[in-house]
Structures are given as structure tokens and as C-alpha cells.
Length: 70
Image (cartoon, rainbow, N blue to C red; front, side, top):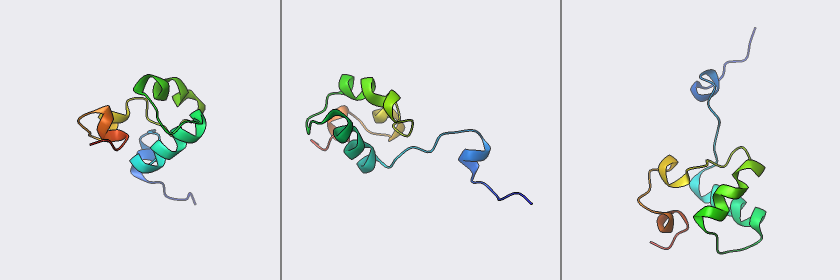
């Protein structure tokens, strides 16, 4: 008997953090409360649960919206 898996796992997709958790995790990895989009992309390889294109993945309009400036 195999434990049932959710659809993303079955389809081979990664489970990414929620937007809020991704931002907090990125800030912790960088050690800075202010994070640019380029800095974020540079650290995505350090945590596989951070989506590389955060704005697109979370359906946002801009980087400012991701970091909470909008």
C-alpha cells in the first residue's frame, strides 16, 4: 500500500512556500530586510522551495507587491 500523494507531488511539481513565508525565508538567507529582485533570484538556489519568478508564481503585478510596498 502506498501513501496517497497530492497532485503537485504526483505531477512532479515542487511545493513552494506561501508568499509571506517565501519573503521571510529570503530575508533570513540574505540577512537584510530590504531585498531586491536580483538578490532574491541569486539566493533561490539555496532553498528549493523559493520560486525563481516570485512575481509570476504568486500572480502579482510587481516586485513591490511581493515585498509588501504596494
